[in-house]
Image (cartoon, rainbow, N blue to C red; front, top):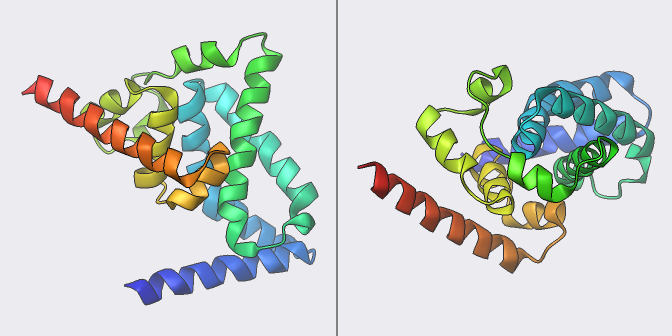
Length: 182
């Protein structure tokens, strides 16, 4: 199983290197592989489907322009998520909202096509939506997008220990929420 993960990582690294050298097909494959997950993440942050779509589109434009500056191909995934995160914040600010309002808006919109794709269980998705934004973001990135603690720390621009604390708090809150449902 570990070998398969290593093979996938090698393939991803190769695509990044090829895209850096100007191979448009390699960049298209990176887009195809990562776009849906980036959309889910942007929607998780904003609870606004159009804002998520715009943010991810802007992120891909930014990534395409600055891909050659990426030193380590292994960091592409975390770099892409961080870029999307900043684009969401930029979009919110352009609308005249504050990031605090973004935190308040981060609730699950029932029936959304992006959320239907993201959630494996409506009940679980609803409980994750009730978490504070940073904790919900950590849970989403760690479990749904399968990013490492180090990658999440890079995306959120915090130490790895902070990510671990957020994950532990989020798990404890989810346990409490599910106990209340019984």
